[in-house]
Length: 100
Image (tube, rainbow, N blue to C red):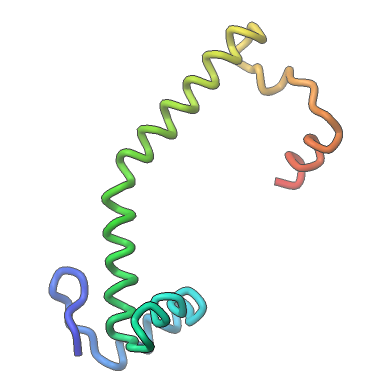
């Protein structure tokens, strides 16, 4: 048994449930880093989540700032807030956009 985030105690049953719902494929790289120790692998997975949470605020600010900067430049160049509807796309670009 090991401690999880916030002091939560994991049991073998909990580990099996986490593997089922998170998927063995998602946890596999953490198990490799942990030398096959699933408990340490799970702790590494949790640490990755904590690091991601810590970076989220800054990343969100960067994304919004970049998106707004692109929008402002395109608004100025194209002359309408709906600039994305006025762009003439190359056929290959349009195909990728439609697929997305």
